[in-house]
Image 1 (cartoon, protein in one colour):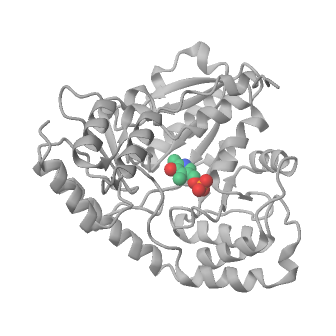
Image 2 (cartoon, protein in one colour):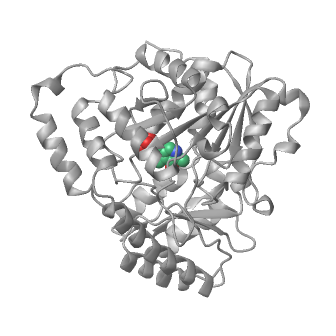
Length: 388
Ligand SMILES: *Cc1c(COP(=O)(O)O)cnc(C)c1O
């Protein structure tokens, strides 16, 4: 049988990392000792006290049933409590918090709750691909907001044409940002709230990296901005904070209207997160936080090795204040894809070409600090040996 795929699948953007994935697989099978700096998945294990809590929670038959899509009351309370301690937010765990099967799940489903065919969604570029894909699956139209270095990788809201804004339902933001590692201040979020009020827009903020920060900068929550809860929803993830990418748990917080509609979509599609995983997440959010401080310290050391190393080789590099990514400029004359290909062929190193995240990412490459500092130092040594 020949099955015709749906128009929505046909419209998916081409996967831009195909070439580099293939080249990587080839290099590995040819016996090259590849250093993979491409993957944004922590190499550190989930802290032991969280794993132990899963084990005991999995042994409790009460946890073997269908969970609710909304999440255990105790999980939502723990999330609200964590947000109070970390950001000073005052959230009603009943109406302003919902559990997610990883924040990606909530991000992908959010447009189904508010976007009608033809509605515009404002999406940053370069960016995590899910904002656009969720829009596409809901039948919406993406209008891209370029993030450029001269604007600190923040979208220029004043550059959006009037006729686009009038058809727009929502705007996506992500700070600390993947892939540019840029951060936003509460002042910027305050301006976004005003903009959203003026144009009747829903603000969706992806906050996956708020806990991966360096030095004295503590990334704010979007909901810290005055009036933000009336216009916004924020997506939190335990994946990066507690090295739990495989566990699939996150949560969204914000306006009861937005949380309620997202929960409605979810309750018609999924049946929530395994309760034992929710219990482990409660342990993560309410337990000892020194594991997070330790992870930050490890990433900071790695960041210093990479930023200082690349700078010593003449690369133009932003010193990130947050995230475990380093966003660097490709050498003059190289497209990001050519640079990545050459680095893999001649140094056995995988980096992510910036253009893979969207056209304005051209001229940059991304390094993930998810390998140990000795390997990173070796990567710098290998790059030194390549003539660009
Ligand atoms: C890793 C990541 C996420 C999602 O993580 P989950 O594991 O689904 O919680 C969301 N947004 C960005 C930008 C990410 O890099």
